[in-house]
Amino acid sequence: MVGAEFVIAIFMKNCWICGDLADSAEHMIKASNIKAMFGKIDNGHPLFRRIDDEKHERIAGIKSEKLKFEKSLCSGCNNARTQKHDKAWEKLSNYLLVRSPKIDVGERIRLRPVFNDGLRKGMLGVHLYFLKLFGCLIIENEIPLDSQEFANCILNDYAHPNVYLSFLVVKNQNIKKQAAISQVTYIQKGEFVSAQWMYIVGSIAVNVTLASSVRPNKREVHLWHPTSFDKHIVLDQLGKRAY
Image (cartoon, rainbow, N blue to C red; front, top):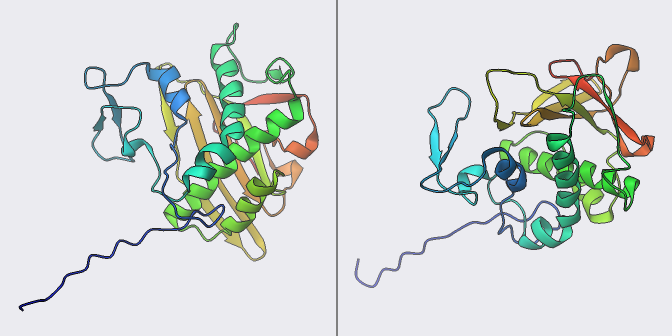
């Protein structure tokens, strides 16, 4: 048809935290954790990613889109707003990965040496870092959870009342270097709602649990929450039940 015009519409999402245009994608595994595990990554030193039972995919750089969620954040939220949360997890994970002697199951890790500039603020940052990842998982996988509550916590710097962290030791002699994030397991039975997923880097793992109610006599791992004001975390064994 003469004079016809074709318009290609590009639909972009809004940032789930603040509502601005989503022009930024968060790393599934923090870039500093990947570097700590695998060192330099380029065409001569590639990394390989696998999703479930699919074939391994070659990754030639730390900024590869294959290492990130889809774009669901604005650059302001993904960088300036949550940078302190990223740094808090970087401090804790680096400490646990390089500590001598190596971490072991059952240990109580004192947090004061990690966050000597403010323990409560630092561990709240760790909590909010995993809330950011959790929100990205909710959006990307269309999990029936309200991400607005997660956003409010990040915007106003307070802890989500129903999200807990468990710190675990990974013991696998066959795999020396690994970085992984699991799918979210979502359960709803009547009024009870729970969701959990796992973040693994090297010998440490964090199990992130959302539960509308928690029964202490039913769980096999320690559930940590910023309101507990504990000055330590307890390292449990990977594979135990969180709730």
